[in-house]
Length: 67
Image 1 (cartoon, rainbow, N blue to C red):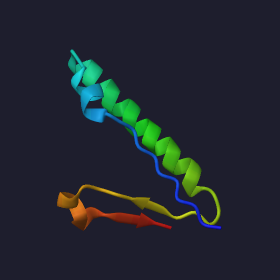
Image 2: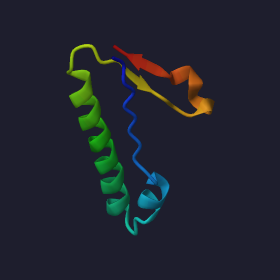
Image 3: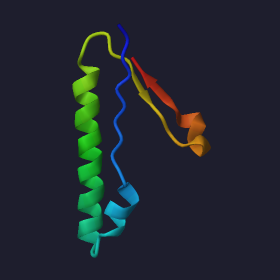
Image 4: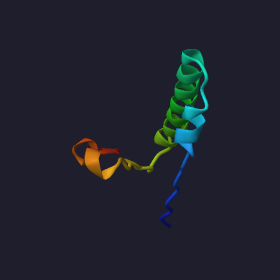
């Protein structure tokens, strides 16, 4: 069996824009990146899983496929 598991964290722009101080902005960015890192680390450690990172069309030269 094949499954596609898609994760979306959003709306990120509104979350980041709600920062009132530089410290709030930094922490919000850090928190989102730590959540993404934890999800990737969990899925990447499982045998037989392939991770595909979809980036915006303007960044296609940086698309990644991790096996």
